[in-house]
Image (cartoon, rainbow, N blue to C red; front, side):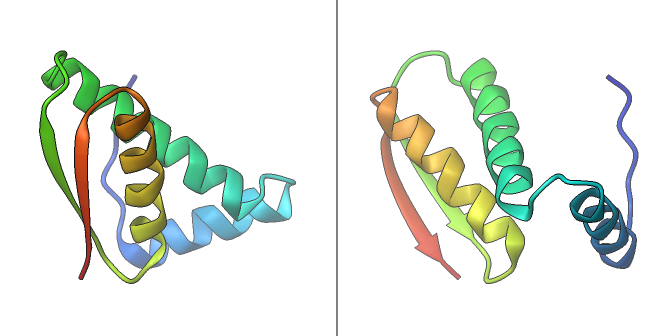
Length: 82
């Protein structure tokens, strides 16, 4: 998969377009959290301990989704809302 870097304003426009075309913000958050979880699972294949730092914006929700999935897998997770 090819990745590109976008600004916060560009990401907001992309999310608004997705929402306008029927992809709810909640589903985008779930998708992002699942993608982050999948990457962390590759890096840390065995359950252990992990700190997830979440910001106040939409990415904070992604972090909570990711932490939930990690905890369900047996990882000891701490979440800090910064």
